[in-house]
Image 1 (tube, one colour):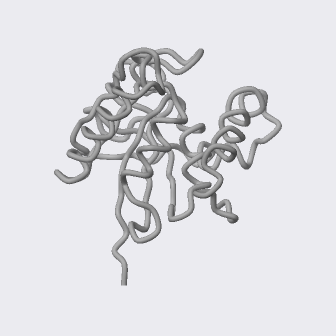
Image 2: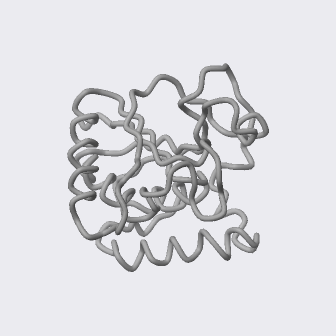
Length: 182
């Protein structure tokens, strides 16, 4: 029997990261939330203030016999801009930083190697600024944030920002896409 693994990733708005992770074959769950701050039980409004230290993240539970941590990171680095400090597109602030919160030393090593590999490639024209930090705690976001893209497909942000990212991901990573969106 396989033991599921967990990673916590921030790549701008958690709705975008979650929509992609939910479509990866081998991902068991992807929960939008907050990590990297110091206060307890932050709200969306608290995190949006940019003063809490939290990042919008997605906690991903996956089956390592189906998808490796390295492959999850490959998708992560290809589906957001890891070269912009504290922003993704129009979303600006430390809460939108690119970050990998590793859950063990093995994940830390893989994250550092993958970051260096992507940085050395011609995927992005500027240096990778993704933070790699130890996981400490995670707070799930409010219920209305969960599976946001699939439950709000006609919302303007979903149509203008998330849908193009999901379409690009599904084209570029067709072999990794699950037929079942949770």
